[in-house]
Length: 424
View 1 (tube, helix red, strand yellow):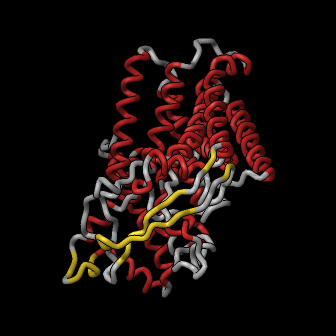
View 2 (cartoon, one colour; view 1 turned 90 degrees about the vertical axis):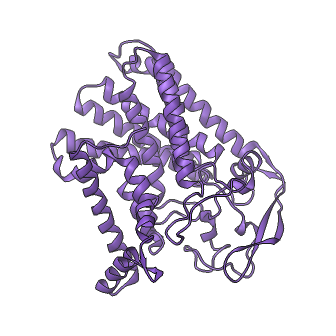
View 3 (cartoon, one colour; view 1 turned 45 degrees about the vertical axis):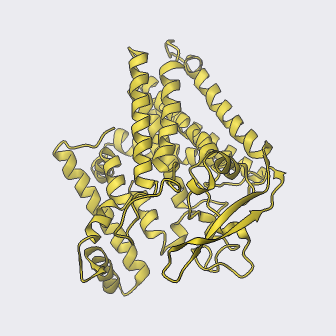
């Protein structure tokens, strides 16, 4: 959670930690896979002994619906962010998919497999371990095959989108817009304009319900300030102005496999009692994933977070496994728990901190109290103070974000001490 806040809030002034504009990965591109991975680990612990599968299924479905709806509320466009003191969303343009919605999909698929597709055999060897969870592995392979088959096999036709005219106040004109046509007519493209991920979202969800500020607007083709956002170059292709959802339908199928990887690590935790045996199995699994992801990248399947390519899934899941192994070694095996207490507190109330801090609900609410003009509020004054102290807008912003992370860690700790947790 701390990493998500850092890259979301400081990525604008530090492009090196912001999401990659398209192919390639930065530190920001590991955040979502880490969330999905730990969801899978948690599911393995929650459902290690399921006495009533029907009741467990009902609870999992209800929790999936709650997470999905909360995601629509937080990221569907209802809240307008820090630069606006208004709220509300036109249902014609509401965004249906987002971070929590992707987590909900991965959670549901992994939970159903854990509840219904786990055998009752005793794990006394690696062969017994494989027999117990082999059907889940088959499901993960099938989901991956479905994704890769669609990504490379689906025909992507030409498509159109509308760009509304903007007046000098920065608002859309009711009767002014321009219709653009993007020429595709091909299969297997992994570029921004003509990939199957976009085509499926465009066809099923509709262009109005996609994310309006995709990362590829920071590519060299679309920004004179690349790898940061900026004005369009004079020769920019028309698709630079088109929406694209990085948490859409097809990419969420591939993302859910990360939950299955987390399940595998959780199964090792449940079935193997020796610390060294757990660490060894985790490290081997992680290295296999990373090496296979590198191999796929060399073969021509790029690491791409927006498309959630199979190679990207392998490398980020492997990295999550290595980090999980390292934390387990230092905390559970070596007893260094105190240095990790801030991470523990934040993790215990991750959903609440995500809504208040990562989605800027708290900061937006504070900005509602201002002096004479909306720009004169506590948030902007504190941020300006940090910039003045370090004599740099970039490093002042970073100091402001880091202090905010520390603040929210303490808030999470206080809530933990009071026994207050947000659960769905």
